[in-house]
Length: 271
Length: 261
Image 1 (cartoon, rainbow over the protein chains, first blue to last red):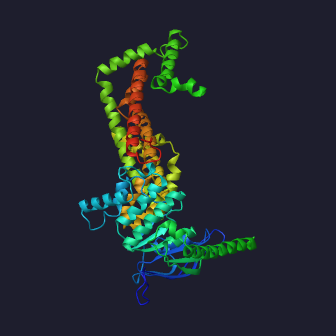
Image 2 (cartoon, each protein chain N blue to C red; image 1 turned 90 degrees about the vertical axis):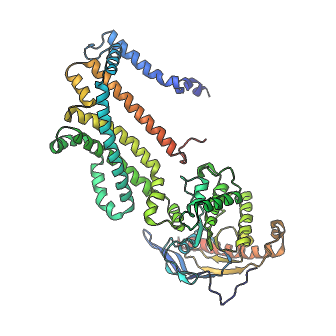
Image 3 (tube, helix red, strand yellow; image 1 turned 180 degrees about the vertical axis):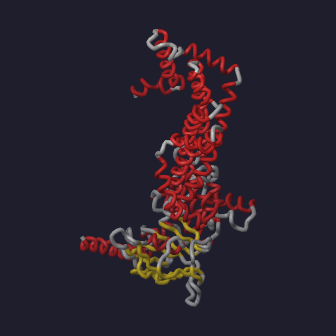
């Protein structure tokens, strides 16, 4: 298991990040003073009630949104999007005018690889995601699960050190979601990339993460953290039915539920 | 079910020419029964004879090519400029602030109203016609391109950014491909305008071209030949539109609107 060495420079260091959206009548504060350090190779999930600004945090780390505070990657402040951070969006964000193969090749074109090497990488990934025979299809011809696999393959093709996942399996049916979770877990165990995942699925977070941060409703703050220390090498059925898994799942679930209830009460009080 | 059965003949390729045949019969009946003076509405038979006569000579062909060249040039220039201006309008707030009032103010102006102005500036001939076509094609292209570019989902731009696409490359790697369906619908409108403007401009500001030819036949009372020339224009415009549609379908195979393979 990954062990954090305290002296190590965090792979991702989020320092005092706050984000306020200008509104028509009043500004909406989405994030309030978020501090979060992610060690190299660590898998961190953020869970919380809907509309708590989870995705906003991911977009800030991705460099897509400006925010107060700073985000450091390998100790250096980010100034915008970068190829060191691969992003998988909730809506897949595949380029609809490119075939499966060309979507996967998209990010490689600016890299150092030759055309032959790029083609080899694409072929290998198409095999990994089980879409052989679909190389020349366009995204509109694919199911949601297939699109998401292409989106993940496209991001992995560039071999980013950091993966930013925004509810990557949220739109999938339950069976496909489990398959994709297993796939992600396998890839993570193999490559030990640093992962920041946004999800609303507590079981998913517990199944995949080393650490789970629970966010409050707007303004989003990290209110609780859970370290998850489970043996990821045992099969899913065994893990899901284990006491350790269920204890962790219940703890996180109760924490998220508390935030959701608080959000509801605040909404009523506001009316 | 019964509804579709009843109309299925109309949707078949044969069915689609039935209304045209009916129109032709109505036309023939009108002139055979002398409901209208045949001098003003020549019978389809006479128009058919005029068509075959015209097709045997080179006059119609030469003048059609002149018109097609003018319409095509104006359409090409107008489309290129329109796509560029639309792209700029959608991407640059400063440019939009200057261009939007001009586009909004001139969008609904019938461009043919400007032909006398072009005659004043450029005289009688190709320049005037091409300018009129250019202007007529420009605006639908600007508006459609701007709309297509502006509606690009931010996640597409973000994911391109995350893959290292630079802002300049973003224009042709993300914004233009996303706007392509809108650009093609603008092109179809512009194609129609190009014929309208080329022919109407030739009628008053040219010494040749199919527009001038139609106008001259009308002036000289050769109405059967006027109808024949109009029929040739209809066929050419229809074929141009079908060609563009086929090209659009091929280019937009990736798009939601395309037929599933």
